[in-house]
Amino acid sequence: MTDSAIAQLRSADPVEMSSKGQADKLIQFEQNVTNTLQARIEGYPDLKNNEDIQKFMSIMAETENYLSLLRNSYTESAMIYNTRIQSFPDVILAKLFRFREAPQFSSKT
Image (cartoon, rainbow, N blue to C red):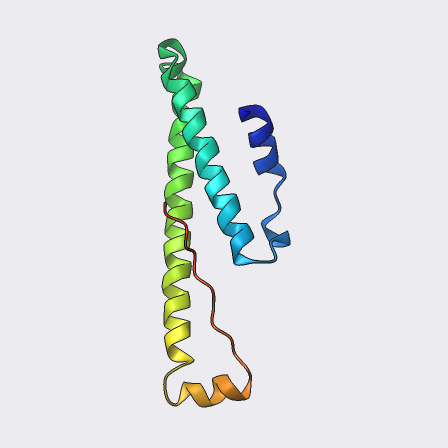
């Protein structure tokens, strides 16, 4: 499962995501693959102590932290935007130009 799952993640194009639900599904799938991969590595002590695997796990942790930061920043920006388009005087322009609420990520990290 892991090889094909990693290939699927690498070939996924976030630009082609047409809805928030698709992005949430991709994030959840990535988290499942990461957890599966970490569980497999934990099962092999010799592999776990390998320098390349340690570098890989470090890079994965850094990447996950970075993505979490980006998701949190996006969610905070969306909340500010959504509040502003509902507050006076911004609500006048928001209605005039038909601004819509920004979606927020619902998946847990």
